[in-house]
Length: 174
Image 1 (cartoon, rainbow, N blue to C red):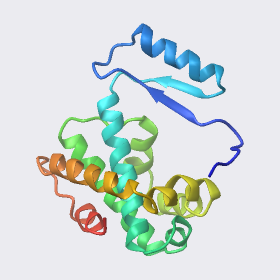
Image 2 (spheres, rainbow, N blue to C red):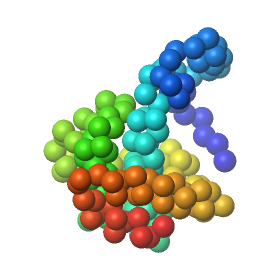
Image 3 (cartoon, rainbow, N blue to C red):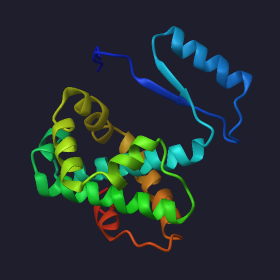
Image 4 (cartoon, rainbow, N blue to C red):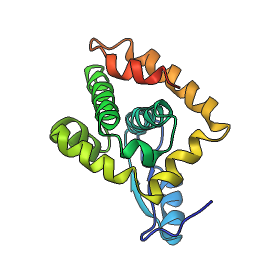
């Protein structure tokens, strides 16, 4: 399935060691010529860990509701749980000296009032883009990859001095 988006997706690229290399510049140029917005990131490991926690929180919440992203978006208490779980995960990452990247994720989940974040997510989860980006991951063989990502992510968070009880509970649904 595909959808014509109002604007092309943004791509984040980076090397494991944080350098900006000719290869990463070349890839950025290729994506830009294809119409994508591209950002080069000097800490892709932190970006990937942030992204993994965000994905896990959302995907686990959808699985918990035994429905779709749109159904999750219509259930405030479940979106509250999802936002709280992601917040716990991000705080635990920070306690391990792993920055939350991009900065917008830090602002959204750690600085903005939770009620506002919940409202934003309730609206976002009910869009066709959310269905395409979320529901198709759950209803395919990708669920095994998601479970593996959950095991690896939660193993790392166990080394954090901060507990993640809501995230721990939500992950059990995967």
